[in-house]
Image (tube, rainbow, N blue to C red):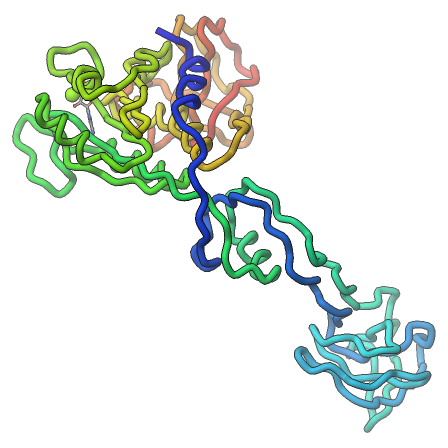
Amino acid sequence: MISVEAARTHLLDLVSPLDMEQVPLAQASGRVLAEDVCARRDQPPFSASAMDGYAVKADEVEMHAMFQVIGEAAAGHSFSGKIEAGQAVRIFTGAPVPEGADFVVIQENVSRRNNLITITDDPGTSSNIRPCGGDFTDGQRMTAPRRLRPADIALLAAMNIPEVPVRRRPIVALISTGDELVMPGGTPGPDQIIASNTFGLKAMLEEFGAAARILPIARDNEPALRTAFSLARGADLVVTIGGASVGDHDLVGKVAADLGMQRAFYKVAMRPGKPLMAGRLNQMAMIGLPGNPVSAMACGHVFLQPVLRRLLGFDQEVDRFQSARLAKPLPANGPRAHYMRAAVSAGEITAFSNQDSSLLTVLSDANALMLRAPNDPERAAGDMMSYIAI
Ligand code: AMP
Ligand code: MG
């Protein structure tokens, strides 16, 4: 049995960053930028008005000053002339500020009569001009790796980058194992249950940036498992669920070994999730998760996410732990790390009283996995505890 940290290190050694590909900007949301990209222009590309008003010379701006309006500048339509003393150009938001002007008096602060305006309200000190390159300048970088959020997509568009270099999406094949399992929507026999883990894990993996494929359920016999592994071919990572303990029907380890898996480890000192195995199977990394639904999901958070981050080209693990004040005392922890289902609210964390690893209702109510290190002593209310938000 190895520690969670040792298991994570082994897992990271099983994978390396995937190739990159170019995708159209409109399909780049959620993808991971694989190479730095540089702005291809200044934004704004000219000094632009931030308001609707009148462009004038700043040193002529004072209460009751009068100007002659000599033309108009609108977004996409610049004024081609030059502003001289005593002149103004009607201007709208986003329009280039005409030559000779360096101040925009907002329209609410002037009164207009024919082509004459008078400043009637305090115009303030802000020029209401967005300087050329004030947002970004030509050549400015967006650095990789970076998971592209909607705001990043908008920025890339403004930088005039129509195609984005991203990491190929990791392909993960998910195999549920068990004679007792039926797909959601199926008709379970009296001794059967619905396969839930594959669906929860698919959702989780996709949140982490992978493309997950749910393979047909493998029954608890060797030919069925061999078939399932053959269907996984082409994936970057194959994840099995269940069948990894030491029961008579737990055949995943044996079949994987027969197929040539080089095992990196088996069994991790953690709760939930002890019977975890991993290795390399041909071109794929293989992770065998425990079957209990909460164990499978907790292992997903603790182990699958770092593996995916590495596949996606993030070299350093971010510190995923946050901390909150313990609301109720806890007894000492045993020798295995414990990821307790917990609720965090307003900076306080409370562990659910029932930590049975088969209870999906508790997991669904939880928004945190609270970490207890091996042999963590008794904890009092008010102690600061680490957790992973889920
Ligand atoms: P196992 O590791 O195969 O012994 O499974 C442990 C427990 O998890 C058993 O109660 C299984 O019925 C259950 N289980 C295994 N796989 C799944 C799955 N995909 N969805 C829901 N429950 C499962
Ligand atoms: Mg089983």
